[in-house]
Length: 205
Image 1 (tube, helix red, strand yellow):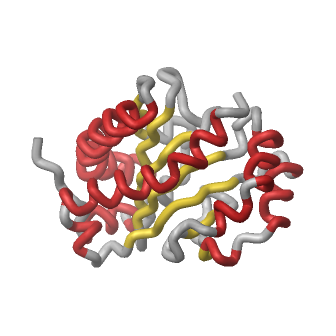
Image 2 (cartoon, rainbow, N blue to C red):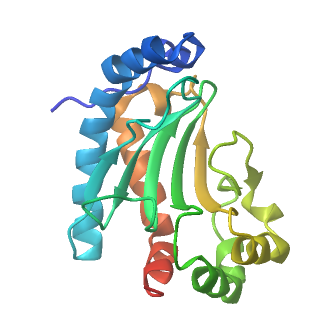
């Protein structure tokens, strides 16, 4: 199946006013691309990990008024959901794409995973310099991996709503975002680089 990248029109989806109108555009423009990329990614990760992985495409079903500022696909080892599990995300805001290993606040093993990451802080800091970290999946901002501090992981451990996401941002004007084959290769390579930290996270389950 042909793999399509993301166009300016796709990113402009997040400038559409109104929940119903924006969600309609997300379903029409973005989710079919997520389906193709996500199917490829889940099979790739399943082969690497030796166990079945499942694709989840964000439906934003809890929203009743405010339209989403971003949207994403998630790949996790659980068929029913992903938020309570370490998972990989690929998604869009209006001004960038993101590829994350995501550990968000619903995760029940946050404290033990944070301790494991603190014990492996040196390895995290050795990720490629173009990797970034987010401490809140709802915010656009991210910091270079080189700026990660022990205090950030301690907060992830100790604060109930704290999160930890590590991966890459992609410029919407880049050929990587716009060329489906390049994008899929970038997604797979990024997730492969993060697999040791995914395995550390699931070892605490």
